[in-house]
Length: 154
Image 1 (cartoon, helix red, strand yellow):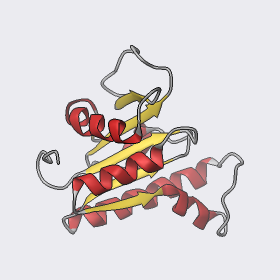
Image 2: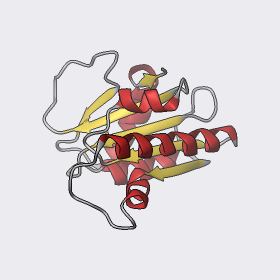
Image 3: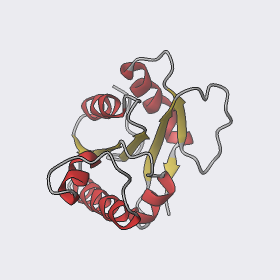
């Protein structure tokens, strides 16, 4: 198991539905050890009366689910747990989540397909190409690289 840099940390995995976000997030949570797993799908369903919607989410609802994900994450972190937030909403950006976190640092990863060789920029988080990789390989690569390439703090 990889060592955590300075104790408990918040990890965020974002990508579209066709990417293995959920599986990668669950693997990360099990690998990290004492860890809470937050699926924003559950928060989304709360806003939609218990049903998942395939339609576009309005901006206010998106801000609300990011706000509650950040509150949950900060609460678990304060209790000594690492946290994995997994989000399947393509409209979510790491920058928006950084704003919702209100200064709380986290490590963000965006799963995409077909970006092999695309440049990483300091403000984009860790971007990983899901092509030809298993969820276990992706989780392993996140833990190897996110410390230096995925840190966010607003």
